[in-house]
Length: 309
Image (cartoon, rainbow, N blue to C red; front, side, top):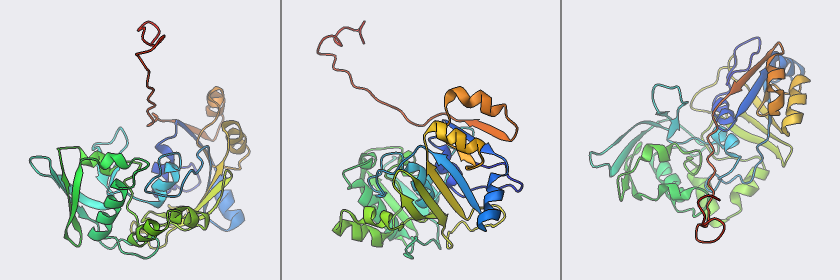
């Protein structure tokens, strides 16, 4: 996602993180530049409705995915709907499956470190997958076909399945597919509240471009650059910090029009045409990725009647 500022900017993985679940986002010209000048920092200000329900990347299964996707990374990234391929490399540079579909091989990127300084390698990837498939919460069930993860060499793993499955989709999931520091996984195994305590203290354990600087529940999240990010930084094209304010749609619209935020994740639907008609605003509409499932008891009245259903 790009803001219409005097110089083109993008936000590392933040564009992906904000866009994935946003039905609507609105950008206003000039605000980020004025904030940078005022605060002597390169800050992107975002209005969002997504709150944090957990800082645990193993069990996260809610709206904090917006932030997790900028702090943690998977082996594979899913691409936008109009992309030429369905997936692109994440922490895996390439991947393949055996002819019978029972073994997936992932070649891993070298020279990557976690936010806590731990190295990312095959052992770390195995530890992350094993921890998530055994978490028993969140979306851990997506790994159900996996029987074992084997370390082939320092930067290669093989994932063995009980039945052929599309493991590329699993490895690119927004939930339960993040690579996490092995030291953090060990600490969390001893202390179930480890990730929550760390989040409250602004500590994260991913390989993503941003780390958590601070968090005020129901109010704001501040992300800041991870200096050793393996993707590199360009001060002309990347934001140094991202300030996310938790606001309802109407307050997002007011903050946007007042120049207090640069991007609104959501504004009232009835205001879309009005905002789009104003100079300096760009409206982006994207398909939502959320599917909601409802279960009906067809054995009891009145839902036993197909006309009622």
